[in-house]
Length: 436
Image 1: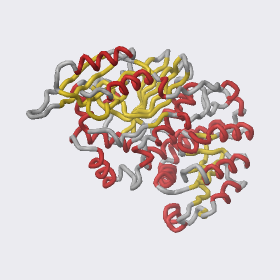
Image 2 (image 1 turned 60 degrees about the vertical axis):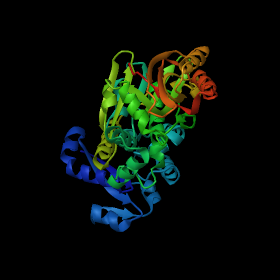
Image 3 (image 1 turned 90 degrees about the horizontal axis):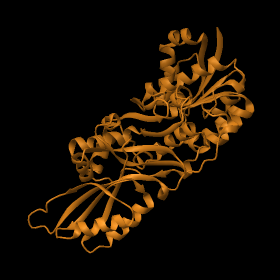
């Protein structure tokens, strides 16, 4: 049985899960790999806690660079997070011809191009299944299971914190701030939840999936990113009345003009399976030209689900150790010399449908003025919802769903609508995807 020595960088929630899962399931793993995988050293700033977890038989240090230089270690598992020290450690490990497994989506989305180039030059593997959607094997599905397909689009609920918040807002009719505090109390949201609620975490993951699906470099800096902080409970209710639910989606779509890469709140028809993913769960819908629509669902975070993905990557490495580097599965599914610099479209050039909510004067002719402006910009209305004005009120809500149009056309129409004297305040715009 071949031996594989593992150096573990970081033994927090996920690192502890990797250690425990590898220990508890080692016999099952060995049956599948014929490999003796062992964590032989751990690096963590909290040495006392690390020793408490792993015991006295495993080396523990607070010097992570010592592990990436250790000649006895075959694979480095990076679970530190961030894009500074983690990057330095991964690059140094690759220089020392060590394979790398990471759950660090920010590292891969921001520095993946550089890391993969270095790994290719050294003939080592970089595996990152745990970086997207936790325990859901979406990277393997895109890179291997769907390899015969031309992927046309991906839409994913890939942040559990925001999905929990949106589910609670819909179920209980509460506003964003109230639900955020509850999510923090329950441990679903961090004390500083910015990366989650502003969509950055989901954008990292969408960037990675887009690169694998379309054979393009990582281009996180070109992703359009919107979070859920400005989403109002009333829009969730109106969407429900119209037969839709609002989710924070990471979307990657191949078009004739380039790639759409965006994260934002999105209306989805309530009848779609992905619209019914609730709580902190994740789901990714992929459309391939041969298979049609496929859906991947499960826990997107947490100790054991993420550890499951990390260990799956370790298993892959043991199976491919003897394979010639040129015959291993490419990092981004496509061979390095076949990766194309397909442009990522600016948000004004994307095409989708829209939900619009306007506070309008309760008088004749308002709707005609609005539809005239929309039509002048090539925007047609699919559905309307007009609320009766409350007693004593001179204004009411007008909600419209549009057919597909370019974003720049929609923005131009909204600017004109907001200039109408019969429209009060800003027009609320939320994108809509039918996912059919």
